[in-house]
Length: 307
Ligand code: BDR
Ligand code: CA
Image (cartoon, rainbow, N blue to C red; front, side):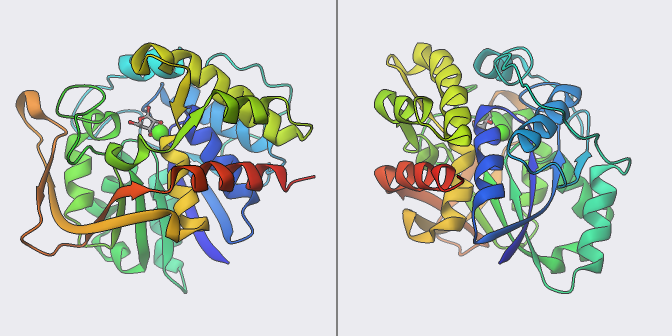
């Protein structure tokens, strides 16, 4: 099994990624670290705990991380527009959630990476604040990162917050720059690819009306998510951005990557924009194309396998 830690800011698509990661037989979810992004840290921590409890994965430890970006105030208004005021469209959980761990997420990541016998895969689904803080405080920790599987950025397509920037990079561009320049192996899943990770009405309904409890849960989350995305897309569907990172770990052939050096703009109106240089080889592999139907199938199969 591949050992992973998920850093996230749930968020509907983060929630689906968490559910998939607890179920995928290929993955061992060691811990979940949480960051402010789609909503305040208080809400994103609460959401992560509830989602894990619902998935029957209450024993996976959850660590609260940075309350705001490295050098900026948290701008979560655009997160709220898509994910609702509480980060999960006011989904009513009927479960008893565990408490978060006392340790700060950054301390947990540093201690775990330092002690790791084998390199660990970090799956990063929110603003990269926690991860950048780890690399700043403990540069040698990078040696124990197998790779970073990141959702973020817009390389050759427009952003979803400004014409230049995607949400996770826009919220904390300084952190994105630190991480992309870390020299670690990075599999980046920018909007170029995640906008293809689209669940359409019949895909969502199939889950919503399934017998299986978790399939049903994911279906309800996606229905809420598609309801808000409809305004943006003009039709009822939703790109399940973050879940693509888990899909790619379960079945790597779902995604095609290109190699590049990528820099992130940190100043002015273009903050959060990806500057791509394909003439240099870099440590970043960015996703360009995905098997969209294959992705939907993997999600459906994974959430329905739990009986
Ligand atoms: C990213 O921003 C958030 O709203 C989603 O959870 C995803 O991580 C997409 O731009
Ligand atoms: Ca996210």
